[in-house]
Image 1 (cartoon, one colour):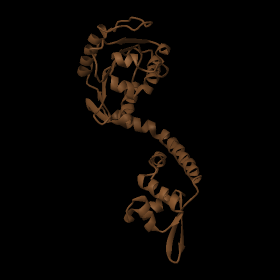
Image 2: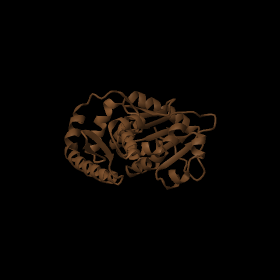
Image 3: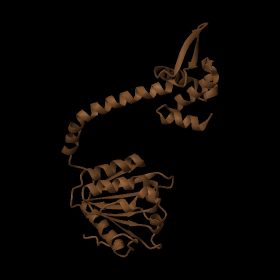
Image 4: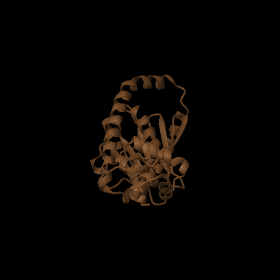
Length: 269
């Protein structure tokens, strides 16, 4: 079975089983259940359920011949119709959720007993933590960060967007980089010269293999990549720990080099 085709179908919202059964049916043309089971590698106990789900999505049709159920994959163009229908449903849900966001925020804000440290995995968890921190920022907050090499490259498409958010809130960005992280990044992605209120420094080569450590306001974020390449992120709400990390970063910031063409500005803690 074509792995690329399988992954593409899964990326649009079909399950692994649905994708395999649909691809099998495209190859078989019309078929009873037994050949579908053999071709897809899906057990007979699950195939009927999957065929029914594909039928609801309009991707499979069913007829009866001599008391046997015969299944066919609909024309592949039907996938585009399926995506259009999903888009309409998503827009409807977004409208409904937008109406109740204020109520949901009230319930969250009412609960003031948030844990001092919160742990998440994956890129979505990483983004949700940054969204929480950035949402509460105000002019005058102080930003000091160490961009560890692994996260710097893993999430490199986010940094310019983050920098713009901070600039709009008039928050100076004191950012510290590992040497390789600074010199090997793609300038077209990071657009460092276009950033405002941006004061980078670069560590000497002896300092390497570091995590992302970011302190801002009264919070801190620590993030890295595990042995399987998955991102994990910690949000620290404890002021003592956040300030302690800020003091450590300031020591490193003060001994680091100011890159050519960038302003030399001291971090005031």
